[in-house]
Image (tube, rainbow, N blue to C red; front, top):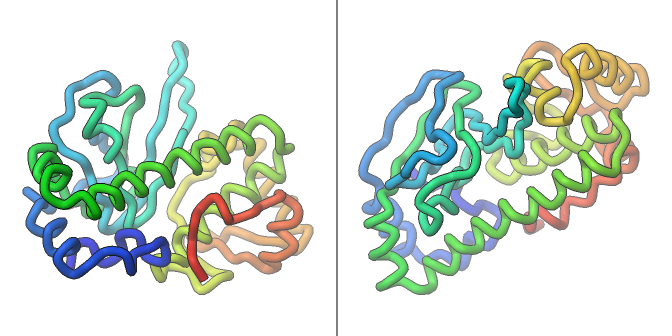
Length: 236
């Protein structure tokens, strides 16, 4: 099923089989998109919302000189731009980082869900509120943590989200992001990011081997970066 990972370990048990079937039938298209492709441009009208089945997607903003800041990184199970349904346009860009498999849900189908299935509509609203909680945490991370803690916090968040959908065993997971991507998420240059990754490895906390992240001491890493996963609303 397309929505196997939707809200896994996040109140998914509140979705009935009819709710999940309704989501399945709401999909107009499932397609594979290569990495580094724009899915939605800032300010452009949008008529559907994107659900991520496989791969990594980012939301980002560019400054006047073209320097990029990632404002969200999405993993399988995320409704990437569900907030675009009421807004009808986005104030940022959305792009694939890796090759992605996505499902497109037209806003007309969401109109029908809101009108006829209020419980399911509430769960979709809950999904957008999770995004808002993560945005607040990103603001805290970028504004109050030092460089090495920012990096550790980012990896702790991604690991927790991937573990919720069965893509991390709690210590090792696949994350095919470049050091430039990581820098854009954490507010630093690739050179600075390289130094932080080296320091985390030397401290015995975590290391990145090509696209594989290994959390050598996840508990200590969480303490270093003040990571409290409660904002992710992951159960268990």
